[in-house]
Length: 262
Image: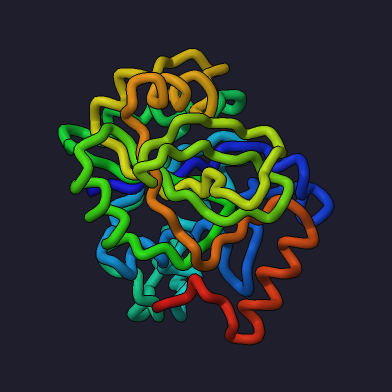
C-alpha cells in the first residue's frame, strides 16, 4: 500500500524558522519532519512513499537522492572522472521506495493528490497525510478500521490545539456529518490527516490547481456518507509556528517524543 504525503506548500506561517526550505524539510533534531512522518509509517511496514512536491522541491530531492552519501563515509578518487566509493550506509531505511513527484508550485492539496494518480497504480487502497504533523497513530489499527467499515475515506480525528475547526460526528461515533476547518473547536475532533482512501476517491478529484482537498472533495464525501473518522486520543502535533517547532524539538531532544517508536 502506498503512502501519499503532501509536501508542496509554502509554509508561510513558519518563515521565521526557515524561509529557504520547504516546510516538510524543517528539522526535528537532525532530520526533517517529513522523515519523522515516513519513519512512523515504515515502523508499521509501510515504506512505499509518494511525495507531492511543489515549493523548493529541489531541496527534498537533494535530501533523498543523496541520502546514502549523507549517511556514509565516502572515498573520492579523482581522475578522468570522480569515482565515489561509498561505505555501507549507516541508516535503517533499506527497502524504502520514494517517488518524488512534481505536482506544481501553486497547486492546492486536492490537485496534488489527483496528479499522482498514475503512481498509485492499480492499488485499491492508499494512505494520505500532510507533511507537517507528527503523531503516535497506530497505523495498523487505522487501516484495519478503514477496511472494516467499507466507506470510501477514513480520516484520523485528533484532539486539537484550540485554534482548529471541528468535525461533526454522528451518533454512531464514526460517520462524519460536518466538515468545518474554521477555528470553532469546542473540545471535539479535528482533521489530523493520516487518511486511508479507496481508489474511487480519486474520481472525486480534478486537476484544477485551485482544488483544495479539505473543501469540495471532503464536503462531497460527507454528502455521500462516505467519510468516516478514526478517533485518536493520543499525541498529535502540527508544526505551523516557531513555537511548535521549538516544542517538537524539545520533546525530541529530551527523548520524550511520543511519535518515535523506531
